[in-house]
Every structure is written in structure tokens, then in C-alpha cells.
Length: 159
Image 1 (cartoon, rainbow, N blue to C red):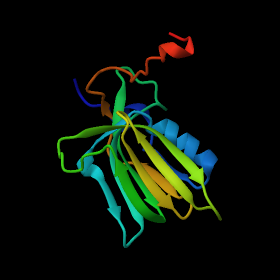
Image 2 (image 1 turned 180 degrees about the vertical axis):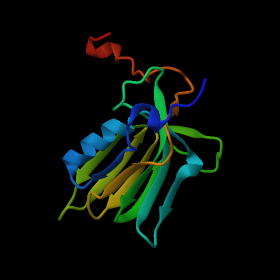
Image 3 (image 1 turned 90 degrees about the horizontal axis):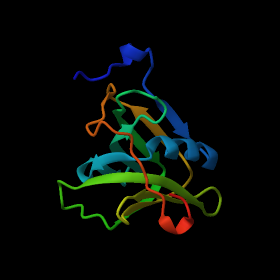
Image 4 (image 1 turned 135 degrees about the vertical axis):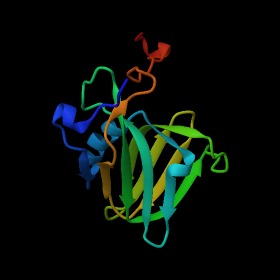
């Protein structure tokens, strides 16, 4: 089975910016279920930049079979970064991004949480919302061959 190609669908790579909470909701939806090795997460304190190379599920494209694409997420104006429930020394660890959540503070600053599956997370203290998301490879067939799913919590009455 061959990898999908941009030329096959006449689509250009995704390039987005988020500069407010509404933009962030769109970006979070596109990044849901992105997976990445723990080694692909970096924080450059001097440049105040956090970068993450992910294998993003292509929610915006209804492809059969389902596709992923490598994408680069850059968060600018980062004042501090911390992880919880993530063993950075475990180089084989693969993480799954569930959502991005912004909690505003004073004067546009705030906290950006990257919520990971398994109770892990990355917390970024940011001066403002300034993120960029860019596809950096051609799409490829998702190795699982399936669309990610999230079983409903039986306590909420849905199945």
C-alpha cells in the first residue's frame, strides 16, 4: 500500500495561526489524537519558543483509508514550561495529544495546557496566545487503518 500524496487530492499542506481563544479551538480540534515521541518536544527558553513535531490525524480530510501527516506546532512567547506525568528520560515513550486548553491571566497572558492521554500534560505559561501549526510532510496512511475513537463514559448516559 502506497502513501497518500498531496498531488492525489489537490490539497496544500495545512498552515494555521492561533492568536486568540477562538483560533485555539480550531487548532485544538485539528490536533486531537496527534501522537508524538517524547523526544520530539522541545522548549527553547532563550527564544521563548516551545516546539512539538506530531503525527497529526487529518480530521479535516475524509480519506479512506484514514491519513496522518507530520505537523510542527510552534508556541511563541513562552515564559515557562513544565510537564506532569511524562517521563522525559523514557525515549521510546509515545504520547497522544487530547486537547489544548487556554486559561487567561492578566493582560492577555495565561496558561496553555497540552492535555495528554493517560493523565499527562504539558503546561506552558505564555505572554499571549501565539501558535502556528504547519504540515511538514505529505500525508500517509494511518498505521492503524482506523479513525481514532473515544468511548463515551458510561456515567454520562451515552454509549
